[in-house]
Length: 196
Image (tube, rainbow, N blue to C red):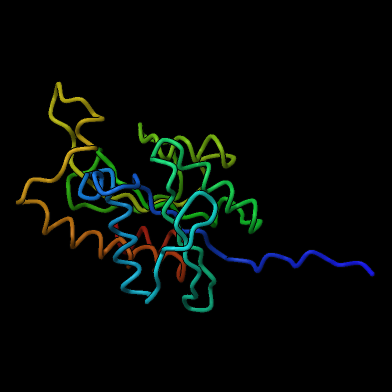
């Protein structure tokens, strides 16, 4: 008798929220993606806590689409490892991988939806582009402010927001979840028109 390996149940979207694991990074600019994942948990009624693909993950359904939500636990610069493992397991195409990340080219509290493009100096995006087969994946980018001249970029993204910006950041992280769900339901162009 032959036993067939059970096929992995498919997911229609992988949503990767980027950040660094561990309490020392929780409030940093670079962990804006992880904080957005926390907002997604509340909105979708899930816990992103299952250890799989070098990430914390959750499976859920939204408007008939099956989603894998993930917070890579590899540290930012190796985010592509986790995303590539999930893509390979679920046979997901790159254009159905949606990445949520911080962006130093945008003012704090601003949001941009993009169809694809370069990494823009973001090491998490760079690693995903290198390991997952290209740059043609949609992103929701959340502005964390541009570092002042002569400021070390790494120190900036690993720094925390001044008290005057935290309220705006909480709001934009909530809005970013809306953008993610709108994009999944209505497509990239519609999300760009609505949120950019």
